Image (cartoon, rainbow, N blue to C red; front, side, top):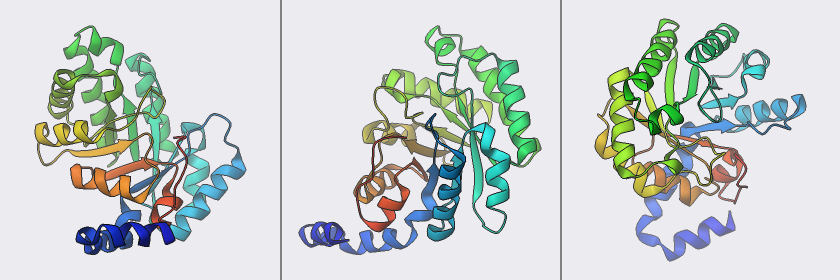
Length: 244
């Protein structure tokens, strides 16, 4: 906490805003654990941290959705999982099967990786139809679909097109990153996404968000959800780690 107060003393203009978000910022956070070496005990710890900090959701691999759903039975937290992760070029049928299984296991939200290879090949209709199919599957179960467009691989022109596709396909969120690419969320890209997207489509940023100040900056840029493994550090004013 000492770092936080040092920061706010030197940035007194922002002090009231920072205090406001220090109270509420946990509700922006998808508390995330997607590293391949994570164990069952790691997911138990993740859920304990959600109970302690009131994070919005647990974002976990599909294999652990049912397990985490049971652990969070007495929490208001949602359960989020990933589809077509992390590269996005699974077949549509594979993504459909993943989504249906995740929803039946208790997932409330699906973070689906856009088919980046198809997008780069300008097969925009193929990309849109896949997202539309997954959105319909999610919405039938009252779940949300977030589409990861992996901004590290896109220029501003690409971002505009990808956001338009997600809008037309019925996505609930557009998400910046998997956390596995060469870079994660970027403030200017998030601002562009907010400019392009209609107000009913929300933005999730992820990849490298380690401090409260970074989290606040993304919220001010237009994000309404933050995917991070550093949630505990963020709400306590410390510094987390870069692993997604």
